[in-house]
Length: 524
Image (cartoon, rainbow, N blue to C red; front, side):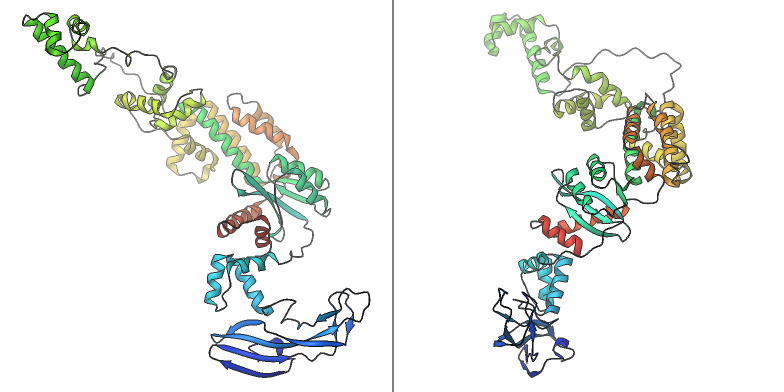
């Protein structure tokens, strides 16, 4: 019995019976007294006894069932609401439990690791099959873990429904354990949570305004530290917008030809050869002029061809078929006309993606859809020669070169970046600002190289509006940013738990209520 049920070592058992695939163990309790679960008073008056059949973990591939006789005692405390109570065997049974404690612990571990459906499949392999709902109920019944008030807490948001519903995760940065989950990301909710824990000294967060406001109101005594990764990421987004704004500098200026350009050829027919309207018009024009040249009158030609006299007159006046190529499709003003010079310029700069061109002119106020831009690109721009020379680097590639440490850049990328910066003084200034900012981030020198000096220099760059906006936002949260550039605390461990929450949500798809998700995050 030591290996099967060590909790029964102190209880006398009468028999162990093996029937097919079931091991039945009979035992009974012998304690003289028991404590009332309601009032805590001890009682020795026995009211009666009954059998309990808690199920245990399988042994040697066989189901184990315990036939345990327990007694019911009479509570001798008159003020207690309970008249009788049943005794429990520590480590073996609990009130209303139909499983032993070690089987329950195993099922809880499976539920925390795999959730419902996957956990139910795993219990089938363990020979203790239960439903997915049973596992979820066991998880929901677990008490919250007892945690001390953290000294350094990290705060970040996680998505319950991306783009719609967000919550807040709080992590003890020193122990790297999650402390709590909040159902929303409101400043009031965070402030109330922090106000209940006055021992918090440092709050690590990103630059979200609701987290800043909640930390200020809920923990005014705590030092707020802005996360360096988020600062660097925000700087990268601002830098990419600046590079895209000066994308014309990414392509070298083509050399002017020494010889004069040849005269342009006359414009071709608006309807190319093979177009069904053009071929039909040319055929009618040739037939009508042939009949007129043979001596037929215009009325006679109209009767022979089944056309009206006015149509014959129009064809007879046209010397060539191209003169007939006019109508509602020709020379009509469209909403795209005002944006065609910009499309032609972007085509010459190397942007040949119709969808990208449509997104760019839409930002400039173009009110129509993508189809007209696609038609203009396919019918007009595709036939134009592309600029001679290598394809210019993309704005994202140039941004990556600027954000990378010069010593870590490959030789080819370094040379391309040097050529780009030589053509654009604004991007040269951007690179200098980014590298000085990166030096402060990497070496925690926010106090040696004053951050207000960098903000003032970046705010004065009129040709880099995105960088200026980024610097102005830093000035609003200057204390937290300075602390992030000085102290070693960061929100990296919080980001790790946010990724873990994404994995747990995928396991619990369809049943990922907040309370169930909170249990798994805090207890798994």
